[in-house]
Length: 222
Image 1 (cartoon, rainbow, N blue to C red):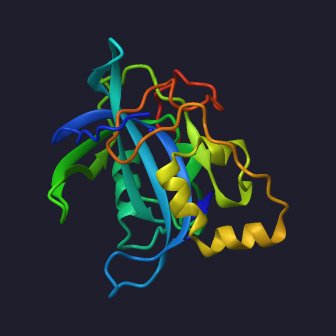
Image 2 (cartoon, one colour; image 1 turned 180 degrees about the horizontal axis):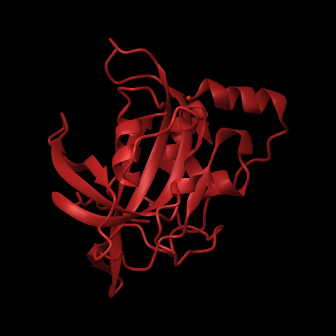
């Protein structure tokens, strides 16, 4: 992507600073804002696993995950740009700002700060406030959750099937998805064998079919 879960209980990731690893980069297309005073915008969803924050399920400790939705923009005020620059530890060059391959962040370790926010319904969810480069002496445990990458031109093949259902609904509501449907023959997607849940849900390596090899190198690749 170039830019210019089966858990039913939603568990808010604990507040504070956590070692994390990015396992998902999902293009959502143009989405309507919750606040009508804002214009529709292209969105992207990033997913992080928290290897040191686990919950026991089926007798096994599983890592929590947290999702963050961003405007797919590297404009000066964009949160995604601020988070990526904090994560890599340096500013983007003028050349990089012309087009950055977002999938480079897949598998990369990060130090994320989470705060709690309360929805209108009264539920509490974790939100990523900042992302930083982990110190050299602060290793990230090996990945558990398989990598998940999707961009809309892929259509509704296996990559789309692997996307959590609550995110599939966002994707198919976008005009970009409608364009794909018009220009490509679509095969009816089949439900994942073990679908994943919603934001802050417990997600495990068994929840998503593994399409990507897991990497051991913890260098920041971007």
